[in-house]
Image (cartoon, rainbow, N blue to C red; front, side):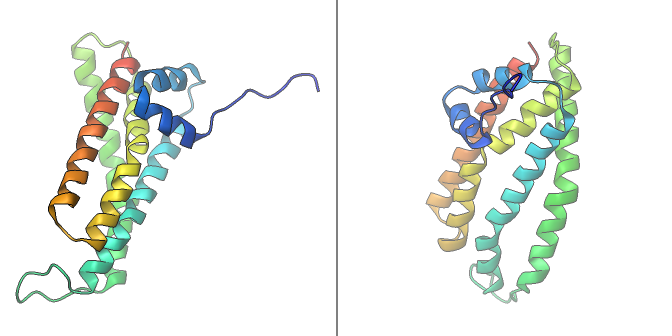
Length: 173
């Protein structure tokens, strides 16, 4: 062989590494060729995983647990259809808008990145924080809305905020 192919890290390895050093992983992602399809793939995989994470909670709601008095349980397929629609069409558009706004704010503070780097930082941060969302979905489905579920939800918000802020900082350098 004339040359060996470039060595690529698995996404799962990068997710684990992101929890230890988000800026280092983001620096590596930014050093790769600009590929909008890769950024979009991060977003779509995140949205699909969040949809899957909703299944235990939706099953619990369809069975009638955690309902207010007088409320009737809804059909599981109806709720799953609404969730799928939201996570495949609505949320990706919202995340694109959020990335654009974050880039404009960073630009106001002399950020030198591009819209692409801001999107990559946001989409990667979402994907890297998804393990906590999967745990949150399991807890919401099996335990309901208890203190432990709320703690995991808050931990996700903090972890995502931490990863995103450091990734965005690196992307706007």
